[in-house]
Image 1: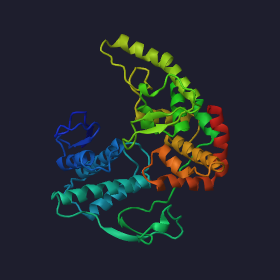
Image 2: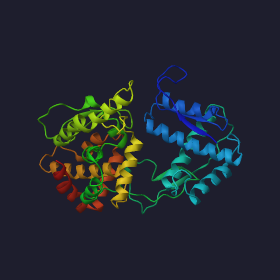
Image 3: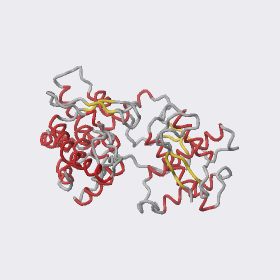
Image 4: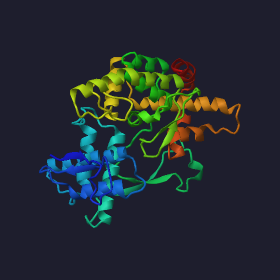
Length: 379
């Protein structure tokens, strides 16, 4: 079956560093050239896709598609609409072989969009004669809430969509209650509690918490909120986060105690051990990865009886911070809460941030409780 690998820093054929670019191998361990060429194009040429996480998502989508091609003995450049529809229907009717869970409709649509991007690029590169997709013009439902910028939408509420995409009910981010966060925290040790606190008090993603560097932490500060620049972000664009000073102090204490013990033991086990430059380490002295952080949180949440994911901590922060900024704006008229939150979260599109306005409108009482209770306790 097909295999998915990831490049190291010096892999790119033109000598350009491209860490983390997915590379697809077929069942005979040969490069799947069209897939690899497109993935390298995405990573090295296409300016709008700078997130390594997006590269991974594209690679995983093509990996799953190539496994389907091999299992059905289909030829990648000779398939048509019927094969794509059969692939979609399999995801709708069967659970994932990797997770054992049903595919989310957003995942299904995301994979179909990735395949459409791939085949469209192949057509432009003269690798295929046709694109195995068709598009329809869709009138958006009047019952669906209008987008944040609907008043300047020149399309008249109509979009071109892949006709194979499935109906995907709109969902709102689900912030956690203070009680739920405390329940999860009660199940973890010092390091993992700090990781949770960094996420819920700054809005950092798990990959950003995993990439937090030692040199980013100040050794002293007099501010209640400490500005810290992070550069390992989803889009690769540096931004500033503002953890509370007590959290920074507790993190520095972790460096001198639990982390220092892990490093010392690793040096005793391995003479050539090189200490990672990241803040959070495993018990063996290795850097905590985003996947490991996500698995840790999922396990702890399940043990606490809380159905959620690590990303919900970012949603919790975003809704609480938006409400806090709205309160501040009552005394500071020049403050724009939504624009400020957009900068803090690092969103490229204001419409992405605006969804939290709908969360506030849906359950303001929960957000008020988070502002008043959770953050007061953490600070």
